[in-house]
Each structure stands twice: as C-alpha cells, then as structure tokens.
Figure 1 (cartoon, rainbow, N blue to C red):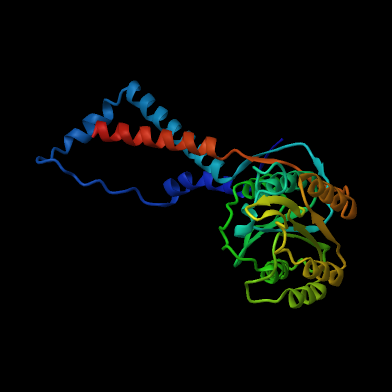
Figure 2 (figure 1 turned 180 degrees about the vertical axis):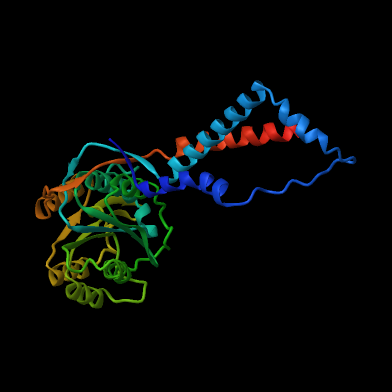
Length: 327
C-alpha cells in the first residue's frame, strides 16, 4: 500500500495562498521612457478572454508543479507485504589469513592455492548462514575489518572472493585478528549476544602487537567463542637431487597455539588438509552453531519520492524557460 513518511509536509500546500493573502504585492519598476496614465485604463478595458485563460492555465500548471514538489517532500513510499526473516541473534565473524603462505598450492590438485580453496568453501558457508550477522576480518602482518557485522551475506561473500593474498602483509598476526574481533563487538555493544569467531590460518603468530594467549583471555571476558582452523597439506614424499625426501608444506602451522585458543574460549580446533576436509569442517560448524528461525517481521519499503520530484522539477524548468523566452 501507499504511505507517506512525512504527511505533515502537505501543510506547505497553503504557503502560496498565504503569501498572496498576507504579503504586499511586489513593486514592478516602470521601465518605460514615457509615462501615459491613460494606457492602464485602456488595457484594463480590453483584457481578452484568451489572456484570462492563459493566466488561469499558467496558475494551474504552477500549482500542479508545487503539488508535486510537496508530495515528494512528504516521502511517498510503497509498503510491501509482511515477510518473516529467520534470525538467531548470533554474531558470527570470520577471520581469514591472507598472508603470503596462502599462495601455496597443496590442498587440491597442485594448481589451486590455499586461498582459492578457502574462498570457495567459506563462501558457501556464508551463504548457508541465513539469519546470522556475519563480519569479515582479513589478517596478515596487520588485521583489518573488511566487513562489519551485517545481514547482507551477499556482500560479505563478494568481498571475500575479491580478497588478494598479501593485502594485509606477508606475515601472520593471529593475536591482532582476535583483538580486532573483540574491539568490533565492544564498539557495537553486542557483548550480551552470542558471538562466535571462526579463525582460519596456515601459519604461526609472528607479527602484531597482541599475543594469542592474551587475546584469547580477553575473548573469554567478552564471551567470544573461537573455533580455529589450521590449513595446509599433508606431508608428502618428493623426488629431489638428493633422492626421495619427506616434505611437510604445513610445517609453519602452529597447531598447539590454535588448540589452546579454542580450548580456552570454549570452541574447537579443526585441521584441514584439502578441500574435502575443509568442507566437512564448515559442515560441522553448521551443526555446532545451528541457525535458528526467529520471528523478525519486516515489510520491504520502496521510496517513490523521485517520481513527483523529477516531474515537478521538469515543470519548473519549462515554466522558467518559457518566461525567459517571453522576456
């Protein structure tokens, strides 16, 4: 149905009448060279019906333009049908490692790097979390809040897909990433609501200003539960100039610290060695932190003021143009 957000603006329709009724007429300077007083009386006696009709039409057009502008000022809106949206009240933040080691291609076919696998799997996870507020933190040498907590999951998934390795530095600041999540939650005053951080990394804390243990202790005080995911391929036997040797592409992964963070905050630690195990981890997270249907009712609103405003401005422009040509 059609509604007006500011219906009291229609009182402005009376302004032209009030100006004409209570203000003195504007003085028009006589620009003629000769003054002939008999001309005024002569003109008054010979006003034609055609000129009266033109003046009446011009006044009607001007009033119609004013009506359109006042209608636009009243903010007409089209209110849609009521829609029930699922909502959990949970704040879910994803912290994704974008350090240089995420370029290693060891989680699938040897051609797809860790970051690309994470983008696809985590993107699917985001789209499944209907009803959660989701935020995105990217961290390397520094931690950055890429997306604040929002119900706009499409934007969060899109920004994750556009992430570039090394955008936050080539090192890994795990403690700063946790600290950024805590800071964001405190700023939004969401500490009373259930909050979850899913932290994914392939390395050890070797940068930043906050130690992981200290950050985890602060998370406990904030009521932030942290699930940690360590990514990196399994050890492999590879041929070298010196013969066969064992290569561990995930040798930099600090599983002990990730396990400590999860245990301290009431979460869990997961180890992802390829795409399938990572997908399984996010499915387990769906079960551990299920989405719940709520009763948040919304009515989509479409603003319509642009149409009367545009038409009113066009009428005003045409009337001004006509007066300019006539002058």
